[in-house]
Image (cartoon, rainbow, N blue to C red; front, side):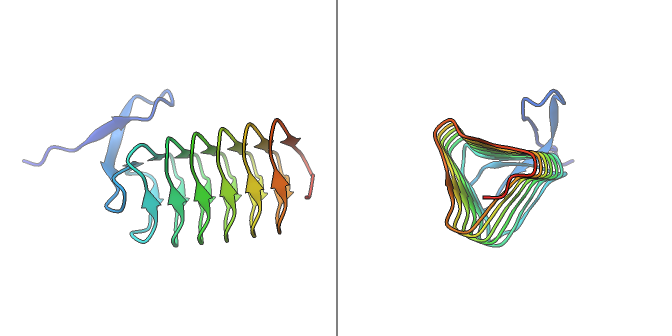
Amino acid sequence: MTTKETFDFQDGNGPVPAHKHSNGGGWVADTATVAETAYVGPDAEVFGNAKVSGRALVSGRASVSGNARVSGRARVYGDAWVYGNALVYVYAAVFGRARVYGDARVYGDALVYGDAWVYGDAWVYGDAWVYGNARVEEGAVI
């Protein structure tokens, strides 16, 4: 008989079926999808219905959850959170204690870091940088 692993992502759902990702060893809920080519570091987490694809990286104590998508060569690291229906893709990076959530989009070579938040249906793209305590919200395009 095979014992199924569980992990508590501290999201209020208690321990759920999960596994360690083959490329990096981070926890991935069985409901989430992470490509073999993506990297999920040993202290990082991907859960809910989140998807990490391509050569994306999730490392440090970062988490990707909900219906969020991280793809291409995007990076989410440090203590950053990407959640809700947020998308982070191409070469974008979210790091530090930054948050990207709701229906927000961060893509291209954009950076979101420090204590910055991008949320609602805001878009950050190109070579834009959002940092410090900045808040980019509903309908903003940077």
